[in-house]
Image (cartoon, rainbow, N blue to C red; front, side):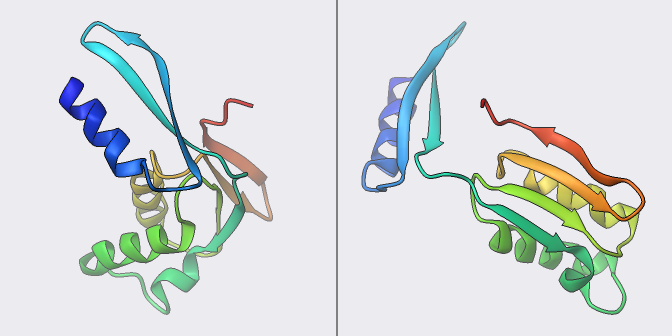
Length: 120
């Protein structure tokens, strides 16, 4: 565990907007928490803009990469717009652990929380 702790601290040591704190102990050692010191941004992603005219399963890795690039790290994300259910599900899965919270927004429902890891 010490190796991994040193590696995490080395990876984030030069980033100005990152802090590392000991979150607690697990049965296998310490659990480190890497937190952004900046306030998260709310980013709205129109899913239709990710895939264009017709979504294709074969292009799924491209859609995931494009979405990750748009949202950054540690932000509050809202997915909206026309799109197939499978694409929404896959984007939600790939964004878990990458963003602080994820919501779905539609005119019929308003914002629906998919997950929220904001400790505030």
